[in-house]
Length: 320
Image 1 (cartoon, rainbow, N blue to C red):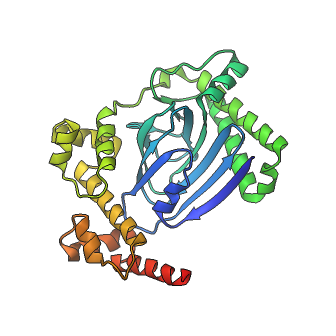
Image 2 (cartoon, one colour):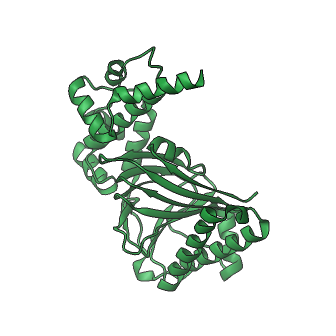
Image 3 (cartoon, rainbow, N blue to C red):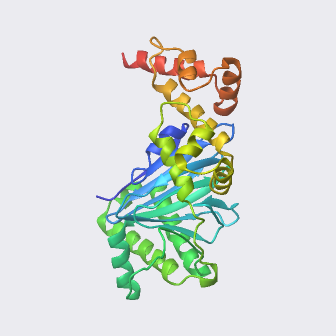
């Protein structure tokens, strides 16, 4: 059944769980007050999303096998983000085929939009609209559509998002959902089948950065060091640093540190304040200089680690 949701988040962990059709991990890379807004519309064949985050971030996303996604910046004057190791300026789209995995990074205040649908539905729509299947040479593709095509996709996507915000009951109607879905599919196929061919580019090779991320995901409960990770991934520190800079925009040391800080925050948020302490959680994640850790935590997340732990205690009391 068609439906929609418009949500505001003050926590990146809550924001990432709202991406129901993809595995999504968010790491905030700069201090400040975090806020995210997202609109999600579920149509019979298409899931569309429109999102904004106040702080710069790195995301690791995996599209499920059998689905494809089309992602693009919303604002015409938006500073380019980097998806799969390539700049994605306004007017371009990032296409992820079945099971594609990649990192994206965006600056503060960036707005992005996407469509997600089954690979079969995408192929069928292409056959219906242009009489041929879509043939992509790689799992990830960067395409610059012609101006009229991307303008139409942006306009239809925006109109649907505005309905979700102002008149969500209308989107539940099957006849309205069908018209919106068909308009989105037609606009997307136009972008994919009539690109400015001089601007079609393949994302940078990313096998190393994915092995790096997969090793981190496989070892979430202990602090990792760069040389250990390099040995596991099978590359030199210099090579890993080059790939992290291209895909993540930061060094592997900085990325490991940010991940650990986020892991501490998640652990504190779910911990029982009567059973554990900030010291125990911090040291479990490899932070031994507690004074420096507390300062860094407050700078990054805007509160002391003890405040995060106390909030969970307050929630527990409210439940009781």
